[in-house]
Length: 183
Image (cartoon, one colour):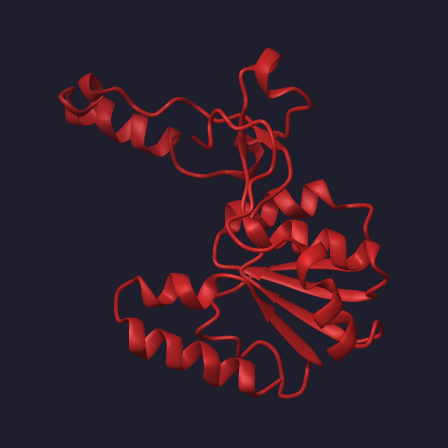
């Protein structure tokens, strides 16, 4: 589905639905932390095709060279202006539209974090000209890089739900909430 969607898809409420609550409780000059920013909008990138099943049966020397070529390098994922004509793929998720719309609404500083280096790289490239948006690769269960009271508010649209569906759910959720409570 994500390979065929041409419009952003948001699993949760869009900013316009949340805007009255955010505006009521969070002043525009607040330092915001967006947990799990992901990628959103029509963010298109190219990447090598997945290895074919025949490559797994090849000799060990071939396997080692193919595995090194499939490791992530940001340069391997150039952004594409037109995914259909250029053979790229599009990715979308919820929070980044939230960050972009929050800045359009007048919020002055949003630190976006995500555990995915690919997501952070792509969103930095996409929003290079938006000074209100900063990006950092980080695990929400360990945000020790930030000192206490670094932010005025934290926004989570889906990370807690995601943690609760994963391995070691209660511990990871408690770690995330403990980290957020420091801000």
